Image 1 (cartoon, one colour):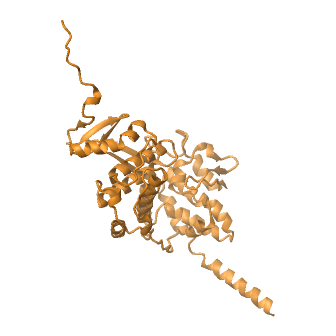
Image 2: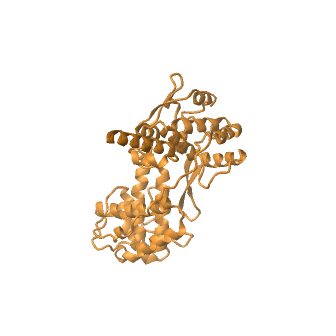
Length: 374
């Protein structure tokens, strides 16, 4: 049988993208499906913009001197880079999930196919106003703004863009720190009356060591020395080390926790109480979901205990209570070390009603001044 003389098409001769059942053009790169839109010509342009980065998986990128890249392309490149950082534990998976969520909202408002050089100062200011209308929390608004700014700063620093929008025209929302609820001793004992073994131990850690939800869920048995009664755990957010004494009540509650792994606290299915899950939808898009069973369980516990507290009161209120009680010692540096803060400024935000101490300080100042005068 004679071999056909017709030259077979090589892969490079073919259109590089596949037409997906969803109507979008896509390409599987390094085991992950990437989508580039339904318009064939535009999809090819978007793929070619990102191809070097997606295939290499590293910062083999181009420098776009006129901002002629689309917002979606920039977001994809940035998020790919951040995903690599999350994989190497440089940033948390939860923060990466926040980056994805915030930039999706930013693209939705600005327009994902807008060129970077078309984004005006007015666009950014209108986006800021939209956030103010959407969120009541200043912290949440500032998270969106900071992630957007971080992306543009990163693009300029890494020679992705020479030109970036006037992001300095958008400022963070000023946070007004109000007096927050702290638990009374009566409320704390009511919580203990209804708490299970795990939650009881976490409550003691919150009051004894100022631990928050993440501190409790990241606590490992090798961080504890129940014989000498100490816990050594660096705060993940700041990296500040903490070496704290444990109360006898805290030790007793921890001794009742069965060991089922390196972590102290697990679900009945032996999973961490706080975790981030990753889902791939039918259309190929991905989604991160944050699960925080500490918060949800504590909220149910407060209802069982009949504690009626202002909105925003939850497990973290134990940390605030610990800071407020500790501040009555009169040593602000001890409070700072307890909370694992990098500076005193943050520690003071957790301290609530210390008006008696303030009155005492003012009265002592008066006595000193009168004594000097006489």
